[in-house]
Length: 75
Image (cartoon, rainbow, N blue to C red):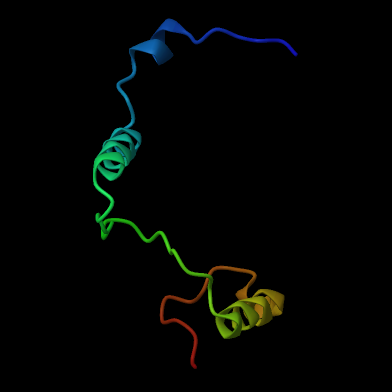
């Protein structure tokens, strides 16, 4: 496989903000085991099966294979 070096312009870019933030969180978590991350929606439990089934059902419905109307869909 061919490898490429990064361009000078790419090398001058600053570290991505969220990457920097995640690295900071990782360091804090390594020092403390009682940290609860309320900043991101990272579930630590499996999605309930009923929700998974409804998601599959919606994904199979061609109505939802396009952008929704601005007013949304009637429930």
